[in-house]
Length: 139
Ligand SMILES: [Zn+2]
Ligand SMILES: [Zn+2]
Image (cartoon, rainbow, N blue to C red; front, side):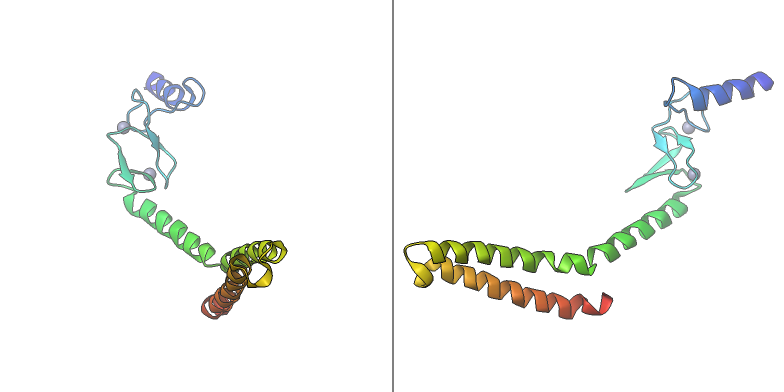
């Protein structure tokens, strides 16, 4: 028994540095780690959920919960106010480039690049206020 435990611990945790074996099958190399309990799992013992592995028939629900919390957090961060300002700034920048180019070109302010640039700037301002109206309350 003592030898078995010794063999288990050295095989599963310390074999060749970082290579881990399955928690349930000490002789089978693990394909991954359960996202819930961090134990090594072989193909037999692991359930491959979309964003991580779970102990088969044991921690699937827990890992699903972890994944749900993570994806909810990502959704919250993706609608953060700082992102709503990137698109308008991009349009403003494009507008300034076009308008500047049009202004200094032969056609002057009546030429297409300048008109296009002004259009971009106006569009950028509209998007900015539209985003503020949509996301402002979360800010
Ligand atoms: Zn687990
Ligand atoms: Zn296994």
